[in-house]
Structure formats: structure tokens, C-alpha cells
Length: 293
Image (cartoon, rainbow, N blue to C red; front, side):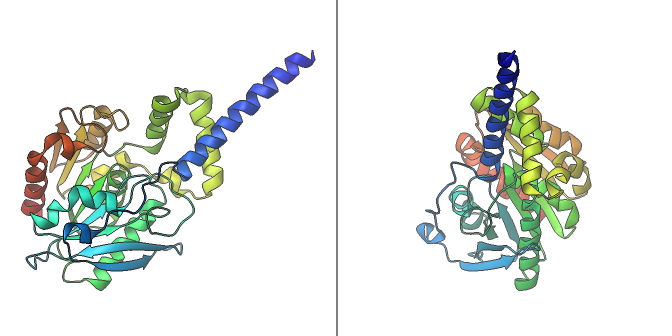
């Protein structure tokens, strides 16, 4: 009789412990990229800046001016566990070859920014708002023709945030996810081979209790995507991406309204589309922003 009581309780305790650990992984990514990439390594002039979020966090960033004094600006949004330096090394061609001003910033709890937790997009939309406000307040000339580039979490945040900022003219989003529940479930299966029930479902409940902010549940890129129109959107995905799969990326594209474009890069893994596509990537992305800014 004792065994019939102890065994279910023990299994429940193990499940709860695994899910508690899983929620901790989400808000405290175990493989955070260190800050080791800086603009001077690429011979780029830049200005450091900081901005405050509406919930009181200080975010750190770089403003890299156009080499040709172009007024057009791109707001650059990195992925979960990465930072502005990691994104810079993949995208400084937009300044060097495209001539755009580039504004990079670290989301909360990433890189040099303040913050104790990350939420894969929910609270990061607050950071996006703070970055846009800084640009409009401190660089009004460069804030008149602004596009957005986002990758992974930064892509999902871009899609969710664009409807609130009608002055943003267009966006390129690489490897966006359709909703945070799906991407958490897929990460859990890819890395741990655990099913949605009970593990992911309980992890999401624990996550809500730890974050204590409704923004985490209201974060929904697919719901927001239609409201980006009539501004142009280029959605890029990797054909071999196992985290933000082609099907998931396509959901964002289908939800969006015209004008929109979809490019699934053959052979590309997660957030590695430029690596797989080479110069075609640079040409397509520069061309998109040049036509729409």
C-alpha cells in the first residue's frame, strides 16, 4: 500500500523538478553568448548609448552611423541567448555595403543590458519599445526612415511589436516563431525528447508564476503579423531549421498581409541563412531595405 502512494508521489516530484528546471532554462539561458564582438574589430565608428525601459531596466546599445551620411536607419534585434555583438558580425554588411545607419541593442538579461530574466519575447517587446523611443528622441533625423532587422527571438519580437509603431516602414525577419509555446515544446523535444503533456504544459505554468507578467501570454507573433500591413515584410527561414521549422516560419508569412515575401534558404540551419546563402543573402536584404526605405 505504501508503495502505491510513494511511487506516484515520487514520479510527480520528478516531473515537477524537471519542469522547474526547464522554466529556469527559459528565463536563464545556459549558453549565453559572451560580449566578445565589438564594432572596432570591423573598423566601424560607433556611439554607445543606453535607454530605460518602462519597467525600469537600462539597456545598452550601439549606434553605427552610415559611412555615406545616409539618413536611413535599421533597428537590429538579436536572438535568445545572443547579444548585439553576435548580430553585428553577421550583419555589419548592411552598414559597410548598404550604407544604412545601424542601431543595435541588447535585450534584457543579454549582453551588457540589465535584467534578471529573459522570456523569449514577452517582456522583450518592452525593450523594443524603449529602443524605438530612444531613436526617435535622440536621432530624429535618422528616425524618419526606419526599418527593422530581427533574427530568431528578435524576429518574433519585431513581428509582435511592429503594429504598435506605425512609423517603422518595413522589416526583415529571419527565423521567426509563431508562438512561444510551440518553440518551447520543440526545443524540449529536440534536446530532451520530452512530450508536451505533462512536461511542457507544466513548465509553461511554472514560467507564468515566475515571470508574474501577463505580457508573456499575450505575446503572439502570428496574431500580430496581419497588422504590419501595408508595410513590406520579408520573412526568411532555413530549410533545415529544426527549431523554427519552415512550417512555423511559413505560419508567420501566411498570417501577414501583402506586401510580403517568403524566402526559405536551402540547406540553412537555425539563424544560419546568410552562412548558407552567401552573397545572395546580402543582395536580397540590402535590396529589400533600399526599395522600401
